[in-house]
Length: 247
Image 1 (cartoon, rainbow, N blue to C red):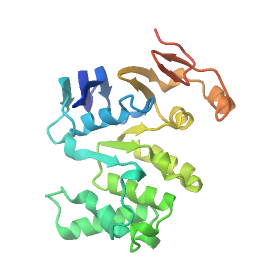
Image 2: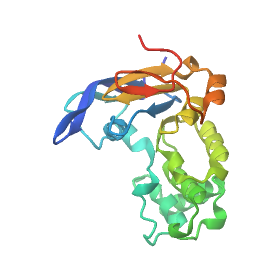
Image 3: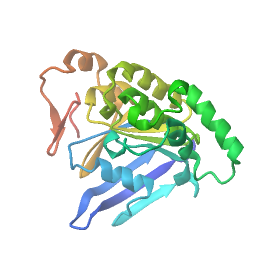
């Protein structure tokens, strides 16, 4: 059995006035895993992503990458509210910027790869449009293309449902299932129903982390209760839609 892509061992992390946003986090991210991360606002989801991306140094604990180049092979799709849609940049330029750190590719190779991924995402017709003219679904696919253009080993998606365009939601998650055949995925989302019906494993974060196999969750129960009032069980102060209580 191959080693995990990333091993997170007893990590504590936080910011200037609160160094315990994350407390004693242990988590392995395996090849072609599909991990959903859920939890309340302020519970540490974004902090964990920053730790994984190497943007935040833990105050203690270890982050072990399988090899030294792995951090450069992580694709990241940010929340829509972090995108300045007034910035004068074209779709093709956004997508191609995902290859900016690829030193081994020529300019011609980068142009070819950009055209390939634009075709794969079905956004050829909007390739020359500025991002300010895109619908939510078009922006979603543009940013996904940018995130996977360098064929990452790990893809991190931060609240992808914030793009709101429901017409493309099923197509988007079908794309993720295809990508997951070769790439590990971490999906951060408040849409718990979507997470539980899509992912293989679930990490529930509220300072500490509790880990579940998605097989512990009954899909029929999700379908029955999704969008309806229901009782929730949880650990600590974090209620969430899990059938089984924690040990």
